[in-house]
Amino acid sequence: MNELAELMHSAAGGGKLPLYQQLQHALRRAIDAGAWGSASALPAERQLASALGISRITVRKAIDALVEEGLLVRRAGAGNFINTRIEKNFAKLTSFSEDMRARGRIPRNEWLKRSEGLVTPEEALRLRLSPGAAVYRFHRIRYADELPMCLEHATIAASALASLDAVGDSMYEALEAGGNRPVRALQRLSALLLNAEQARLLQTREGDAGLCVERLGFARDGRAVEFCRSWFRGDMYDFVAELNAS
Image 1 (tube, rainbow, N blue to C red):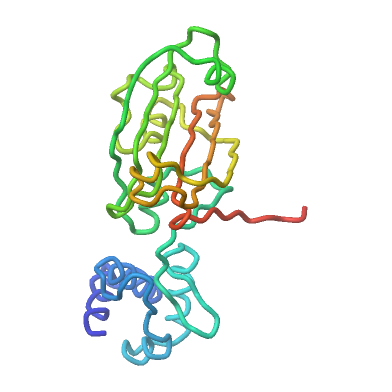
Image 2: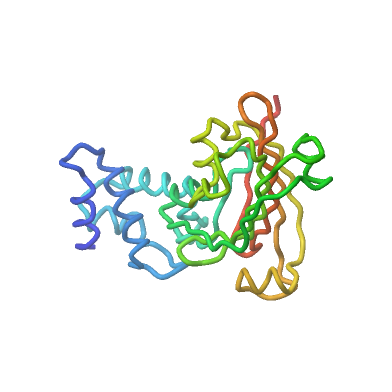
């Protein structure tokens, strides 16, 4: 608890942050540092409040924020647990890198293939491109904290990027640099069983549950610029969406 109090003090930024945000940042840093094991329960809210000399309301507010981020999961009658799964808001158009950084995780890529070529019939249909149009193709493994999370095969209209080498860690950052970041997308989610090659690359087992997500991204001017097909580990990823009756 002393270490957590020190983390709170260092997160305070000279006292500029509200107390619950100090605790929120401190808890995130403690979790990232392995203060509690993966999928472990945090100390009880009453215990945290007593040890740190703050109110339970402050502790609850900090934990609520981490639950909303997806870093913690609240189990009725059992407590607050470190969430080893990733929750992706299916209704929010963000990149993998942005999602991971927002959860305090470190994203990285392992490139499998980067190539330039002419559009295939399927790509032409998806991206509304004419036969013979140029496209860039990017195949990579996406990692979070050194754990492989998904395989991604993306086709980008060549007109949307400066060059094949324009894409670094984040494809959306490269598209944004050219004013072509998708602002709207159509997504399709389907369940599947991972084949041998997918399982090998994702460090899981053949036949394990997976999720396939197809996304067609549109730039602000209405052009389709991105067609992406990704295969996620079913044991690590959840897709959620808020639904309204209206």
